[in-house]
Length: 309
Ligand code: BDR
Ligand code: CA
Image (cartoon, rainbow, N blue to C red; front, side, top):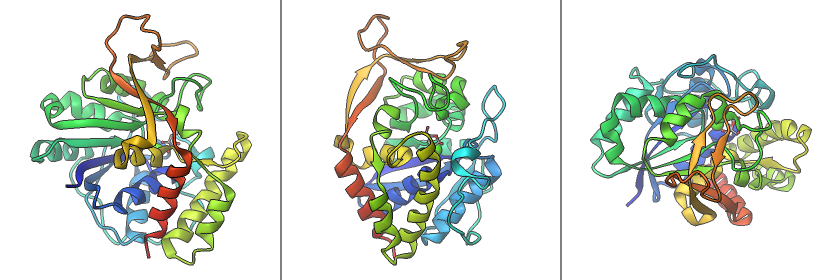
């Protein structure tokens, strides 16, 4: 039986690939809805990008716009990484379907309440929508199997020395989610920075002659430019690794540890503070991904992307 999932994303190059990965595996996951947050770009752009990518791949599903800003802060976006559109690189035609008129947060709440099986939430952007759903409808916690999220890190940051982008953009929301009591798998930079595709993988996609494969190759070419400036050999596929972890939890090794979110640090706001040695005495609340099987992950990505026409 495929697992019911809701993807909450901010496309974004790697979010787009995570979406395509999920829809390539209907035998493993059933996507109930795609909800969208502001993050990599403004909400208007991230919603349009979600619709465009899905349309391009011939997928139609419920897409719902959530909040256009973090719970308590101004929005910070990442045009350096994702360009002015949020999805620079390939030329994508206008979408063939529209976003739903329901708010993304209500969409999460309604689907979780209505599901006969516990739902897995897969956030790959700032945690604003998920936090708002948990605050507005705490009863849904009972019917959430797990939150498998891309965000945070036990070690380095990427947007500040201490913080990863998704957590930094809305640390208050992250704190709500991490303190919610719902089981969490944190797929953070410790593993996503290892989960790189290389230029040869991108070439394979570009040479595939397949519409979606070539488009993903073009996305990765653009995404690679920024990462070159950061000193990466390839392109770290953050969000697809979170999705891959839902499809096959053995792709990462995790450790159950206490994790808290720094919301008021002078230099460390947005840090996921991971207590490796139990010095806080707090209850472990997060399965922190610490190792990834890169080869198996890259194989999964390439096969999935090339499975489209
Ligand atoms: C995360 O930030 C965004 O730019 C990516 O889409 C990913 O979700 C990585 O820090
Ligand atoms: Ca993202």
